[in-house]
Image 1 (cartoon, one colour):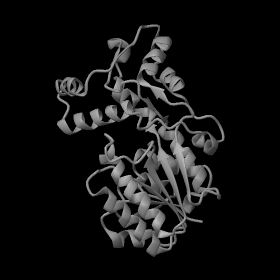
Image 2 (cartoon, one colour):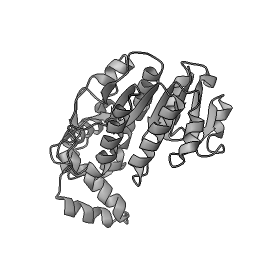
Image 3 (cartoon, rainbow, N blue to C red):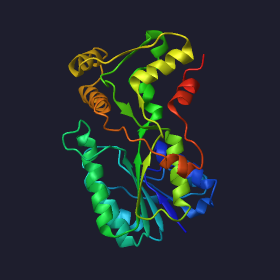
Image 4 (cartoon, rainbow, N blue to C red):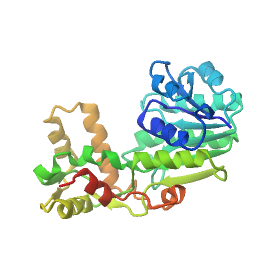
Length: 290
């Protein structure tokens, strides 16, 4: 059996390959990369590096030859993303790939009025196309990366003693990127996951007020939570010379959090790991050790 990982030089793809190497021979793993230089460290580990990119259909067909299972990690660039994914899926079908695992994102519903529809739209279109191809699939609807919590609360939150975010009382399903990678490796090396959709995140969802309370308990300092209106929040971010596109992106996530768009408790990650996934309190304790 040969497994190919796209996005192999990124955080999630690279971590998945590291977990796979612990389970199967490195030469059973292929990695898609735009050029050999980027994937040099993978080649040194014995991984079969194949050159191709989502915009070049024929390069994908060639790269997918002899592949049994494909991990299609969603593209990081939002421009033309849906078309890139569909390109990869069609190329996989032409190359005879037998199973595709696709990394999507967790959500309560597919709502065009959601603050995150500009991100969700590509995933919805990709999922629909993948299901229609008839290729056995597994959807990994990933929770919000726990690793990115500090991007929203600030690495200096214990000094500011304030979380300033327009997330209201909304709850979010968080998951550690490394544990998502481990679960992906488990799914790719076992059977019984065909035509299944998994909500990858915690059994308990958490609000940012609860995160503030956790930090208060961990640090012994009173950490306040302030949920301003969105425009005030954007103005505050802009004062710190954050690019407008980044400001809008962060604000959109905050609004989505307030809408409970990612409030989807799930045992799927626990089940795929064979243990309880890391919870937010444990993560915060490790991140903000006294």
